[in-house]
Image 1 (cartoon, rainbow, N blue to C red):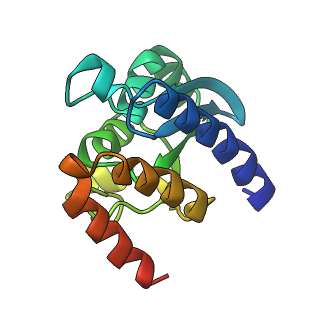
Image 2: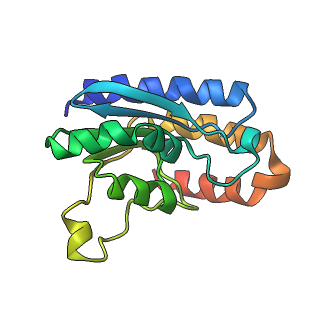
Image 3: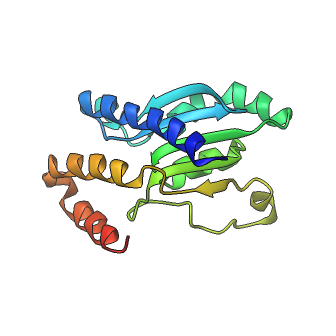
Length: 168
């Protein structure tokens, strides 16, 4: 895919980040495409839902499961754009639903799971292509600004994000 393509769809995900923040949620946005067409846009909703599993990626994939299943059967390309590197839950959901490509903006030094190796042949056949750092700095700033506003919860995480940025 081209950089312009990736920037366009990551831009949509960043718009969801702003909406999530406006609603008081963690600033994470996601966009799901099939064959280059947007089929869903989502944002993190953990705070408003008072749960641990309302991550932008998993909720979006869940809402789009029937389209993804049909696309997979037809050999169509399914892509997930997300502003933060997917955690193990979201990455696992993407792998199991046969998302072909994951594009993320900001690495997650706390819970990012895209660097792991496929644990078996079954997973290797389903492992998505990973593209990272698309609008990385923008996503980093939005996420760390959110953390700064919630230091009671995010102080230690913010330190890890700031240390990670030193290596860029």
